[in-house]
Length: 195
Image (cartoon, rainbow, N blue to C red; front, side):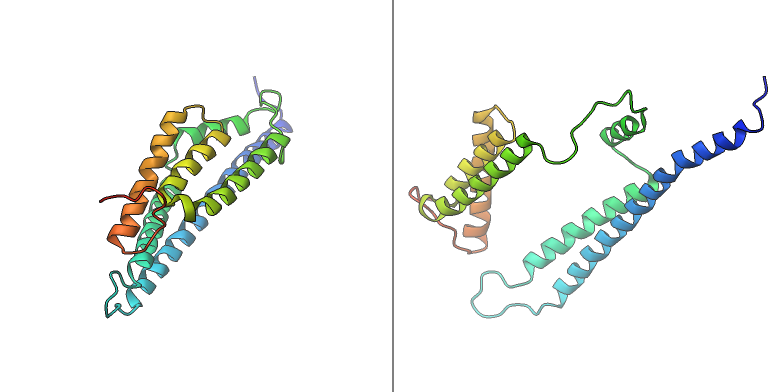
């Protein structure tokens, strides 16, 4: 069975349309990955140009920009490898397959902010304001624990004990790094740590 001549150009056109967005997406991913890598390298090089702090400072002005620059460079390098070698996570492939499926097979997802999304956004904003107001009196790690558990609950988590424990670990770890190691005073709150 042969395909009529008029159908072949139509098939080629459909194939080109299917390949077009994919190539555009690859180009965009590559450009973005290279941009993130360039920004990370720029921050890292700039951090090395900052003069070393003298005097009685526990930590000079260099470490934080160096950390940000190194993290940006690492994320950019991973992005470049993924963009140029075509490495994608299975979830990305599944989303792409779903987006390429015929419209009748796709689930209808609301476009734009829904009332539930708006409510969650405003609740997170209120929780962030409460966190900022609570921190000076209650203390950094205590307020962080409560904020993390509350934010997880707003986003749909129903495992309160796990969320409180994760918030406690994040709050205490951040408190020890900044307050004890870097010498940056964070509000200790009502329960001062003996360590």
